[in-house]
Amino acid sequence: MKRLILLIIMCFCLCLKTNSESSDTTWACLPFEGEASYDFLYVIGGYHSIDSGSPFPWGAVNIEDIRFIGDKMGDLVIEYTDGGKDEIPLVFGYTMWYKVYWTNYKEPFASNKELLNLLKSTLHLNEAAEGGSTYTFRVRMDSGKTIKRITLKDNPNKNGTPAIDGLYFVKGTPPKKLDGGQISVLERGSFFDSHTIDINDPYPDTIKEALDKLKSAVTVKKEELKDV
Image: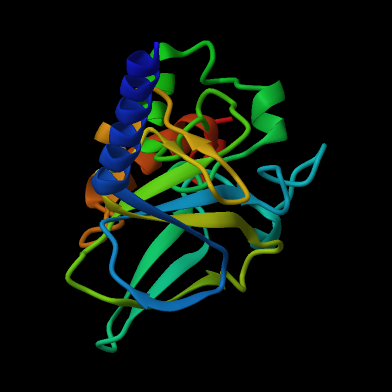
């Protein structure tokens, strides 16, 4: 019996050692200041303080109150000790999405499989397309650069602000579940295998083209009104 207990303890300690060696996870909030290098950055949030595409029920014509697919609400600014910086755009349909409104009403995507699949491939927020409670996007960092500061830059031409609830920094192989901070993150399936933002190309043309298609499918252009 004693040997069995000892064997269980040894296996448990080995698992702990293996997990600690495979990844090193650190929680932080914005604004972040500190000098460290990481392999991955997880950004929790990606929704907006005004949770709708436009004022209910009549919408809006002024650009300040419109939050459509493809609209940029701001940037996540990452500064490095060498003086350089990267900016990750906070764009609806890519790194931002709706919360309550999307949970209650998913049309026209719910009844259009092709459109829904395009949204799922473009939207880089874990749990967002499914209407989950915790949105997260992942960024593959350049581990050769030392991060000095991370801040949120709001779009002054839009009312409201993007919401970022926290950050996880990861060294090594990312775990499926991130915890130890104020919010836990559980990857849905293998989502991040195909939905990880590259810091060297944070807003690729393929994403921009997909956003244009999504926006065209759910909005009416001025030139289209001439035929009405």
